[in-house]
Amino acid sequence: MREEFKLNFFELNLIYILCGFSFMTTIYSNPSASIIYRAIGILIPFICLLKTKFKITIPNDLRFKTYIILLCLYSIAVLYTLFWGKYQTFNAPSKNLTLLFLIGITWFPIMGYISNIKYINYNKVVIYIFFILLFVIGKGYIGISNQVASTSGRFMLNASQSTLTFGDKGMMLMIASFALLIAPPLPFLKSFFKFIFLGGVILGIMGAMKGGSRGPFLSGFISLIFMSICAPKNMKRILTIFILGLIGAGTAVLNAIHSFAPALFDRIMQSILTGDSSGRDSIFSDAFHSINFIIGGSPIILEKDMFFGYHNVYITLSMGIGIIPAIIFIILIVSLIISFYRKVKNKTLSSAGEFFVYGFFIFYIFRGLTGVNMLSTNEFNMSILMSCYICSIQYLNFRNHINKKIA
Image 1 (cartoon, rainbow, N blue to C red):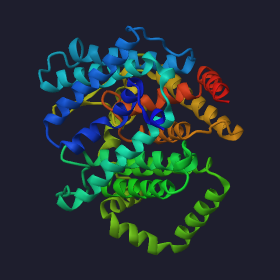
Image 2 (image 1 turned 180 degrees about the vertical axis):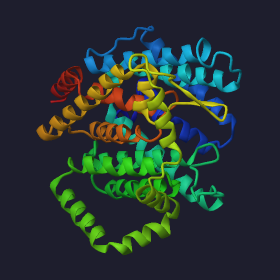
Image 3 (image 1 turned 90 degrees about the vertical axis):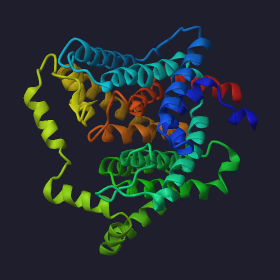
């Protein structure tokens, strides 16, 4: 039993990438928590690299290698823009902070992940993510009574985390919980823990609703629909009855949502009725009018003395390195969707860890439409890299080899 819960540094690195900052700021909600997080975030992948003697073997998968190349090109474009291009004369702490994010928050952890990718047990990873986020979202939700809501009525996860993070981590908890419901990795998780996993699904959705962010909530809902396709028949029946019941209740359900999460309800209705996008439409429009087909434009924009992407990862990539690489990226995404479809159809998507990666990937490809920053949102990068590996021949062969040894 102990072996099934014992983590190696490669698994710890992945868990830390996906929910480390939220965990750190939950147990120690102080501005210095960010410094501690970054220090640990560099230390863990450094240990991973030490264990492999700094040998990084990229999986022999075209899609994996393609995304690494695209991310390299985008990173180079950002560095050039900051220090030799458009913003070279701009002196601000955020310039160095962007460099720190690029190296310490994005690339170093990714190198730690790649360094020995085959030693990661995704079943163990998803169990730890579930319990960590159950604590994080649970504490965040309980702490709502002590929070002062923003002017829009939205709540933050904690003093160091935004309303968007409440939505993102809430939906990540929902995805992890649902993956464990579909395929519990250990026998004792099939009985009593089913109710805890169901509670995780509900708590994750409630947290995202209180955060009031449209992008995470709607992306999570889409992910839940895609994951439901993989559910056992009896669970599908329950979900179908539940959804039909919600539709049948109609106005009563809408009133309940409005009462529980008025900020989210009002913002979604504003988007539907008036097309409100919180200013993103003007950012998208500016990008479309200034983009160069071959080399793109500026890979980052300056907002309130801070550098960001364009609140849309596909536009950000187009502006950063050009339309053609962005099209290649979209082809890569479509290819992964097809691979996951085949896995679902052939029932070769079988473990909780694989279901989690599948749901996480679906969540972030839609989440990327509304506000993901490739510099700081390493969860997006990991959703692509994990999916590329899970769908690779190399992973399939390795999994089959492990299954034969167990048999």
